[in-house]
Image (cartoon, rainbow, N blue to C red):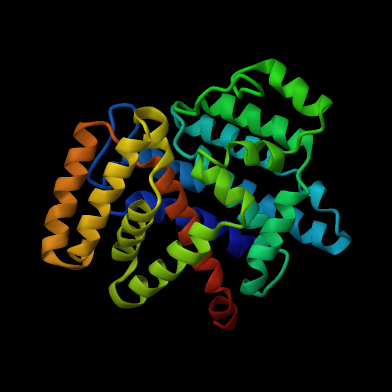
Length: 305
């Protein structure tokens, strides 16, 4: 796929995700947080475009010589976070960057959408210890709250970066360690089953019948209903995350955003989550990645125009 198309798909996905309304418990077009606002997320989605284009170009080159480690995924993630920090004051998109960057590189390795997951898996498997170090630096630069702490290889410890290099622990390895309690880490190390098997088919089906906003919100609800949000679970416990997922399922059972009854419940749900500071941020990141995948699937139509 063309790097320019890939970069624009990443930017569009970031902007559409935050624009989803009402996307419960998150910043959206009619709801700000005290420390970050809707426009912050729009800006963040735009300014990562150059890095996503670079990721795609590196993916193309790596595919030609089968040197996937040369993509330097961690460096790209760090660059995207650094660029975001130049424009907005708070961490708005670390998780999105972590998901979209390998997708951008993987998409450029073939024009065939059905190779995307395979390419993605190759890229993650061939990450390096330096990629892991740069990921740690990106997390520190983003000052991401709610990341959790570990006794060994903790992201907040500078000594951990030395240990990653000395013990030859690559980015895939370090994410795998966290995969049992972090859904983003799990997706990145298991070929994105939530995105490709739950999010993507939901988004495409709803988009074809109801349009972008309904597709975004319904996809968000669908993912949240089936997979307890790990940002909520890290901050408030797994029980609370499961409770939020059950509430999302109840709204889907009423039709979600597609029915008047579901829309009423959705607005109440959004208010409840926001008032109690229950932010399904991981679900938002997964939704953004889903939207990018959906746009990548449209590439043949783009080429034909």
